[in-house]
Image 1 (spheres, rainbow, N blue to C red):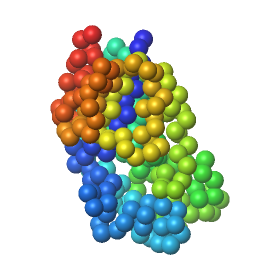
Image 2: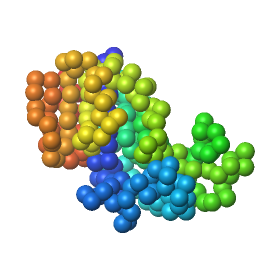
Image 3: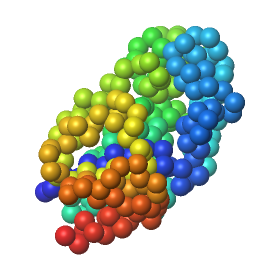
Image 4: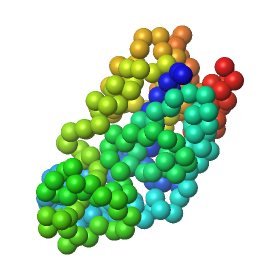
Length: 226
């Protein structure tokens, strides 16, 4: 069975109504992202960081997967499908995808500040005074700017085994995630779905200049008909 690897980013979730992590000015609610998504931010203003992610978590629980998320599930009828997402939402899982790897963590989980391997499901606000079993503060289970990306190596291994690569909702300009393309076998067919593509088509790269909810079903239909 051929393997399809999907690299997804904020653009696919935006069509479900989720705010992207940063707007064109690189700000969130007037805050520089380094003020709400970095270890220094956590040390300097824990309440602000918690509220940033609490608001995102509340919003996530109000939205649903869109046509792009659902279309990717259909690929599992014929292919082994591995989704590697830069998103911290659970929309791929809710749509029904079986194999989802989160590069940057998961919004609906919390983890201990004492033991990073102590991770738990968490759907409510995280508040100061919410402790793990070691009586240490819980934090969002998110990879912040300046932190290592522990799931990068497993993601690279999946990319190295890809027979087809689909890139959707991401410009693939931000590292280390952008480096995953370098692990894909030479000549592997790639589909780049973006309404404003920033790269040029070539023999193994097919560009679909559409938003995710329209472009992904189109690519899925093409792959299922092969």
